[in-house]
Image 1 (spheres, rainbow, N blue to C red):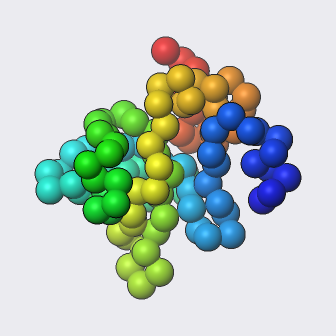
Image 2 (cartoon, one colour):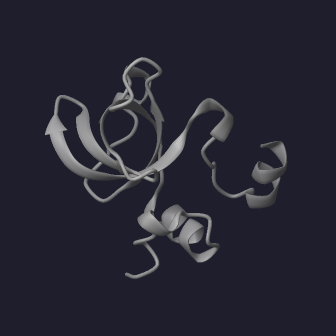
Length: 106
């Protein structure tokens, strides 16, 4: 993972060893919860943990990094939200999976 972060450099990428993955916010549910379409094809109910709740505003269509729960695979936590510039950078450099690559088509 250390080599991959050095190669990309500009933006953080999901740590596959910790089970993190890309996702796109599909629907807002309220109370810091949302439905996220993940890169493995599943839709998960995700929550924004308290340590980033007041710092990051997330809306529909945002690219995020999620970490599925160990004991309930259909739920996850949001770890990071990409800005539109970062999302287009990942799309241009073909880092995003094909199922989530909607940012280059704008």
